[in-house]
Amino acid sequence: MSMDLNDFGTNVASSSNKKDTAEPAAPTSQSEPESKDDLFFSQWTPIGSATYLAVSDTQKTLRGGMYTVEPSNRGMLFTRMDVKVDDLIRFPDSLSDKIITEIASFWTRHDVFKEYGFLHRRGYLFYGPQGSGKTAIVQQVVADIIKQGGLVFSCERPSHLNDALAIFRQVEPERKVVCLFEDIDAIVDRFGDSSLLSLLDGENQIDKVLNIATTNYPEKLDKRIISRPRRFDRVMKIGMPNDEIRSVYFERKLNIKQDELALWVKNTKGFSFAACAELVISVKCLGHKFEDAVEILNELLVSKKSSSDYDNSGKVGFGK
Image (cartoon, rainbow, N blue to C red; front, side, top):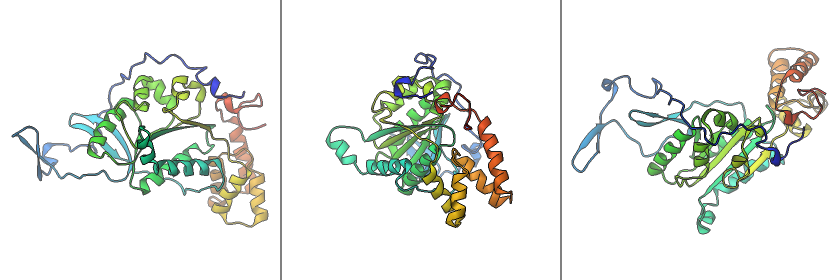
């Protein structure tokens, strides 16, 4: 079944009145000291015209990286995540490469946005089947912005992120920020869309921000999220890696001769990036026969279910 943007929201249960009412997550033990004795007081902060409170060491900027945010009885906590990913590969002249280049250009245009009276913000939503490369694009964008000294906030609950951004901008008004909404349909299912729309509309006047969302199921998203510019300005389908992209991937990973490379590309038609990675691991890391590994992966992919948007054969799965 094919789908265009006019089909978005056709399977959406009404969520406009759904409140973001889930209980706030309790702070982890790593986020706060276990007792007041664990604090090392070294500075004073004013809490009134003549009243001061002893505090521990402070810093003017957060360390570059990806953060989660959550409230606590001491205020909003910003927790840096330890993120590890596979080697990032750029695919020349591919859609992913054009997206990354376009985003890099966006970051250089703050003065132009300001000249015309707009907040310097942009939204991208990537949809497509599992394993098509959405996460790989996100990882590259995240790596690029952190390399530039920017920050990435992973959205686990929109209302928390909205509050955290307002606080963050008071401390660091000029820092580049990426807000990441992975599986945004699941976020809407859990919390509704009211606080999410408030966040995307920039009601806190957040400048220098890029919103990036991914979904495997675009038909679950309401058109109010999809079809209004300045929420997600670019809505882009990311398909499975084609022959050229798989060729670049295997060439980078395997460093093999052209005839063997052609064999790998030919036998992986319809494979996701995850399946291509598993094939390399099975053959090169675990010593399995190439033909056996391909057969096993083909059987796995045939049984793997996805959104009906990605099935044009009348049969669920990747196999024809």
